[in-house]
Image (cartoon, rainbow, N blue to C red):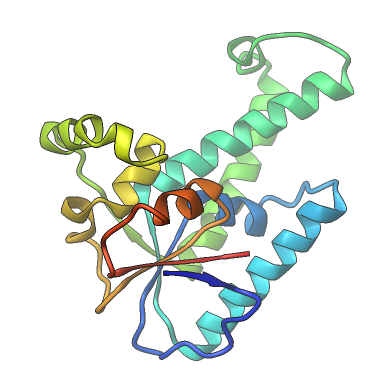
Length: 190
């Protein structure tokens, strides 16, 4: 099922929620320049706050955390290129010590906030899971990290109650849910 976070007023407190990297990006990366992005960030912040106040446990995976850190690094790189009117590669950018320190500080600040707000689950990606990803690739629209979030083999390791509740801003999940047969996956989005 797909639920709008704007319309989801009540959620039982025993439901656990897994938060996708893109939502974490909206909530914790404070460099949103566009009004639309700010509105999304505010909506997800409000929903997460309501869940936390309701006592709902919130989870993220170590893989999603890695994805978030990489997206922040790339955003800082693009901002640097734009502000300095330069065309360097990401690898070259990583060699600029002052920028490296600034990005490190942003990453540390982000991680500290996340550690205090979420339970972190460590994911194990084995060859069987990769094989399943490839075998089912034509039946879903998910990238590999998103696939790991919803694949039944990986979900069994997550601490969730009856349903797997995913808060995401990723439109791939909306498209994929039309074809999904797993009634135990709930997607919460704008």
